[in-house]
Length: 33
Image (tube, rainbow, N blue to C red; front, side, top):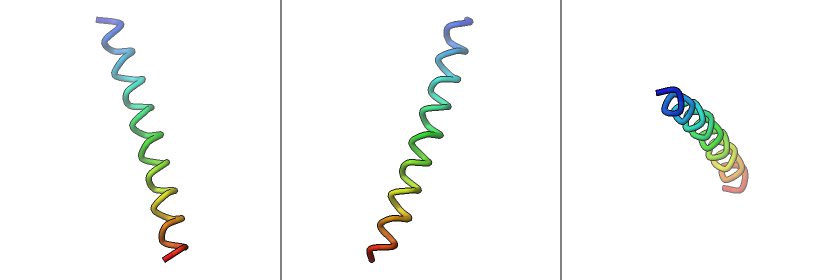
């Protein structure tokens, strides 16, 4: 149970990092367009 909770936390952090990365890419793409 503990390992599953840890996995969810890691997935959440990874998802947030991906969202930030995609938003930065989106902003830089809008600058070029």
